[in-house]
Length: 198
Image (cartoon, rainbow, N blue to C red; front, side, top):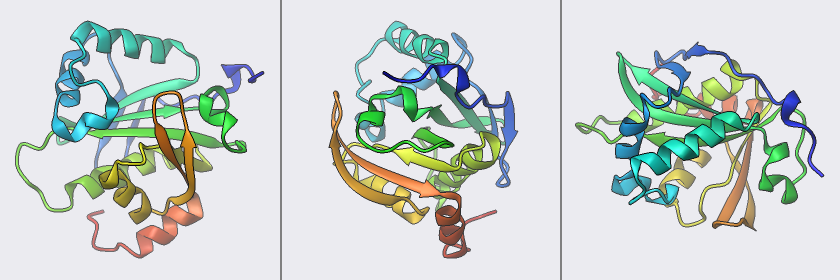
């Protein structure tokens, strides 16, 4: 029996990261065609939404926003949307069956928009902004991720920013690699990555 989602972390309506990304809540239906397009790109294959219709993506996000324990943000840089950031309270997710959830744990998913042109370090800049959103904007004490074990690109980013891997777990839809990152883990990683734009 999971606890009631009434006590889930309540995120702010907007957050500006130190790196200059501005986050706001996903707007339904306004943002759905845009993120639907992102999900059709090869780099988003692990979201398992390639081939989904706009209506199916809309239904998915309506359900997430109505769940009471999930939220969705769009991050923009210089007014251009560049990232989708999902947060969730893992107490109410299947992940709670696979590790000991602690107060202040916050689950995270991230999808970076397809690049119009190559910018060195851009994915790391966006990932750092999402981590700042999780810790400073949403008040997480520890961030939890469960990417597909075959998603090498996100594993590299996770480890770069301080996530500690706990092993693989069998979820309903995938075999996932469970990883956690404390504020101290994140700060230590940033000290090691001073070349990332502020």
